[in-house]
Structures are given as C-alpha cells and as structure tokens.
Length: 259
Image 1 (cartoon, helix red, strand yellow):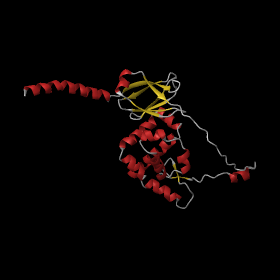
Image 2 (cartoon, one colour):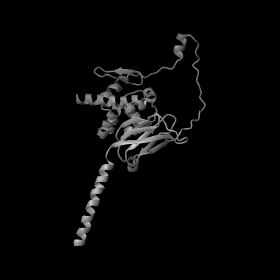
Image 3 (spheres, rainbow, N blue to C red):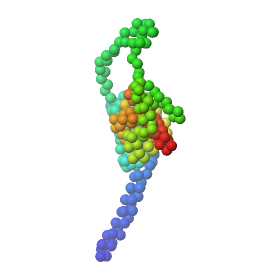
Image 4 (cartoon, rainbow, N blue to C red):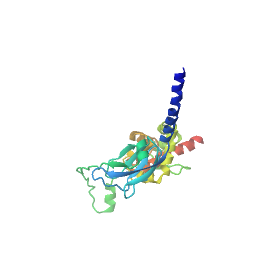
C-alpha cells in the first residue's frame, strides 16, 4: 500500500507539467515564418496568409516574412497569384523554435484554345445594340431594405419568388448557420479584417471562402439561389461580394423574422 502511494505521489508533478504544456499549446501567440518559392528558394512578397481558426490575416513583407496570431494546431492558409494555395498546421516546434520556412509551388498554366464568337457588328449603334446578348437578371427592391434582390427572369412569378425568399427564412442559411452560431461569428470577423477582405476581393474561385466558412461551393450557390441572386451574379461576383451577399441575406432575414 505504501509503495502504491509513493508511485501516485511521484506522478502528481508529471500530471501538473502535462496540464501546463497543454495550456501553453492552446495559447495564442505571435507566430513568425518566411514564405519562399519552392523552385528558386527566393522569398515571396505580398503572399496572403490567413489563420482559419483565429480569423486573422496578414501579408508577407519584401523578405517573405510575416507575423500572425496563432496557437498550436491552428491552420494557416497561404494564397499567392500564380502559386498553388497551401494549408499548414501550426505545430509546437514551429512556435517554439521559429525560423520556419513555408515553400509554395508555382502553378504551370497551359493555355487552351479560345474560340471567340463574333457578334457581327455593323458599326451602326441602333443595329448593333439589338445583336448584343441581354442580361435577363432583373432586380427588385422592397421598401425598408437597403439592397435589391435579383429574381433571375421577368416572369409573373418573379416577384413572388423574391417575396418568398425574404419572408420565408433562407432555409439553407438557417440550417447551416442557425445550428452553427460560431460560423456567423466567424463571418462577422472575416468582414472586419482588412487583409482578408482584400484577399477575397481578388478571388473569384470560392476556394478561400469555402475554407473560411467551412462550406462546400454547392452550399454557397444554394444559399444565394435561395436568396434569389441571379446566376450571372453567382458566377461573376468576387468572393468578397459573395460574402457580403450571404451576410446581408441572413441579417435581413433575422430582422424581418424578429418583426
């Protein structure tokens, strides 16, 4: 019995140190590293770095260095034009020892054949205007709301669709975000970080947005369809415009639902 007691007493300090290490590993610190070109090993300037967990963003300086708040196991997302995006998990050794180098791989672009469809312009404005493609995405605004909604077509049911999308909660939005309040907090944090907003404004592929919101591209399209945004908007808007559209749609629904 005495021997067992001595063994237990000897384990107490080890347990205490383990708890301290766990607490330190979860602590958010200033993490610094350098981003380089994997082929040339030269530093890369103006690389966008986003901490997906802390929802903080920054860019690399001319020496390829950056500093960002991070804790152990946070995921850093690296994006740079002409290079493959990359996610890196922060480890305890990376924070403790520093001098970490993140290598990005350059993309190889293959130009494909582009077919240009002529509009057969004549040079006469009145005739050429009739030959140009027409955007059938009509917008409708409702008194009391600052933004307009795109019904997509000028059919008799278009206005009904708009009213239905607003007065009836965007069900997919509610299901996705109503059950995940952290996602809505993250969405607001994204909008408050200038570096992340600048990155999203330059993106049209939805990759960064899906990583930040933890949604699939098809979910984003379904949300915007339920909010009656047109296909042309969904296809051509940049990631920041898509983010603002999702946010405004959900916020307006909440206001109307409270009333």
